[in-house]
Structures are given as C-alpha cells and as structure tokens.
Length: 146
Image (cartoon, rainbow, N blue to C red; front, side):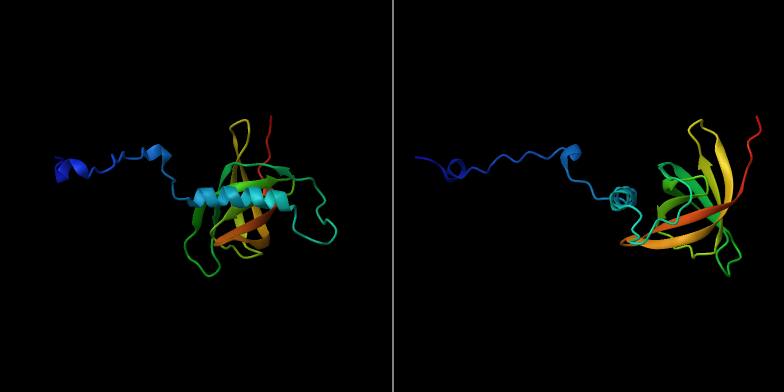
C-alpha cells in the first residue's frame, strides 16, 4: 500500500538563473529605444528641410551644463547624443531645457579628445514619456590649433 507522502509528489522546482530573468528597463534603455525610433522617423517635419548643413548619426555620452532661468546654481548632466552637424548637436534627456537657453557642451570626439562648445537651445520636442529631444545650435567653438 502507498503512503500519502509518496502518492502526492510535488514537482521539482528549479530556480531560474538571474541571467534569464527579464530585466526591468532602465532610463538608458528608454533613451536608446527613443533614439532608434527617432532615427526611423526622420526629422519629423512635414515641410521642407530648413537645415543648411548635413547631420550625421553620432552616439556618445556628452556633458551638458547650463544655468536654469531664474536659477543661481548651474546644472550639469550627461546625455546621449543623437546626431551632430557643423552647426549643432541634438540629444535626448529627461530634463526640459527651454528654447533660447544657453548651454555648454563637452563633446567627446573619435580621437578621444573633448571639444568644449557653447550653444543655445533652438528646438525642443517630446520624444517619449518623460523624454525630450533637444537641438542645440553652436554659437562658440573651441578652435583646434595643430
């Protein structure tokens, strides 16, 4: 005769390795997904292209610093750039910076140097939940002397 303990067997439960568990999306994941989506959309403007210089996809971590309107302390944060041209750069971030705001951009270059650029925000658009695409037009550039 079978005992109750041997008649009812529980299935063997194996823990799922952490590497196979779905991870929670991070802000960096959301920004990268948004950048890819924006690239597929193009400029997003139905009218004629107003840019006078060609832009190129350029993905690096740049540092943005600025003094918020009415603020006494400067703000600095890192952003993932979207594209770059001779006249400006665009990036995605959670911080809303208003058009007309002056910003400083520390932009890493492929040769591992960093260019210090000054610019002003010329375009801001929503780029997803809590994210903004911000376009900066350069107003001053550090000149490289070789």
